[in-house]
Image (cartoon, rainbow, N blue to C red; front, side):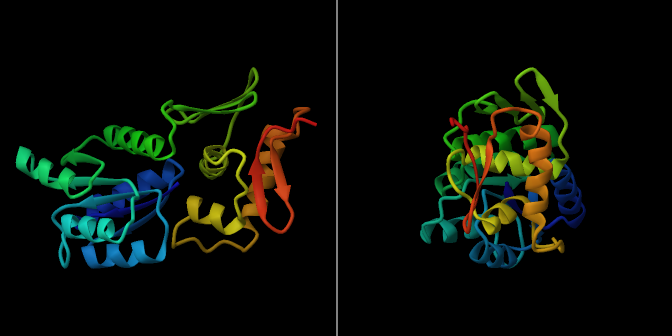
Length: 225
């Protein structure tokens, strides 16, 4: 899942981006509202986190601009203010959730997971495909009775495929959901990670879940043949 994190406190931004990347998210970070708008114009994000008090353009200004443009991406607002009027203003401007600083990282993660579930129409913390089960909060993956260990990027790629179960995703679509602008890997990175996933979740089992659609990309679905 691809996240934009806009926060003018550099130390807080750097720590949050680092920790979210460790959780498997593709994260772009910026420290002012104008830069945030530039990122949003050039990339489709699954979630945007906006600090309200930012230079050049504050979080509410950014939020109102993207909503007027018809962008319905989930937005989580961050602010040091805790007055009811501030929360009301943010929600009325189109925010999906609100978190007051200082916050616990565990709560930030829980709110991110909740917003992503809501966006994808998933009410549960669990994604399934046949006998494959992925728990978002614990990062636990099971195929039948077998627990499967995945790296953070493997998990993120599998999550993207499972959230779009039955839909063909191109390599570029998968790359933008898992990696960020700092990524400098090769052009075949998706193919490499798909091979890693297949070795772990498909090769040991009779029913295959990850399928190649020649010339288009990959799809995760139950093989009923």
